[in-house]
Image 1: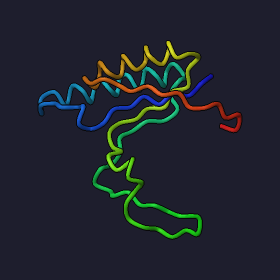
Image 2: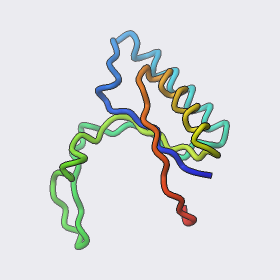
Image 3: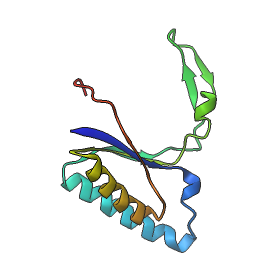
Image 4: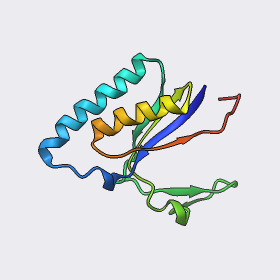
Length: 113
């Protein structure tokens, strides 16, 4: 089976305060459904209050990130699924619960993971 990344940027989730509670409950229900189905690998939101750092091969840590990932934030889910069609179905469930479109990407096959 293939692992799929289903994600959205923070700005896509433009909610009023009253919608936030419903979105939280609905998205947690979809996560539980994925866990119950045995397809959930990992998920969560990037903590945007913690700045990114870079660590090089010698272990040196510097503040910042690659320029192309400067805006990396939002929510992510990794699901292990039998097909892209299944990934699109789960993405639609997540999109409905979060009230924003989801990006779907497939991980390359790695027999060690």
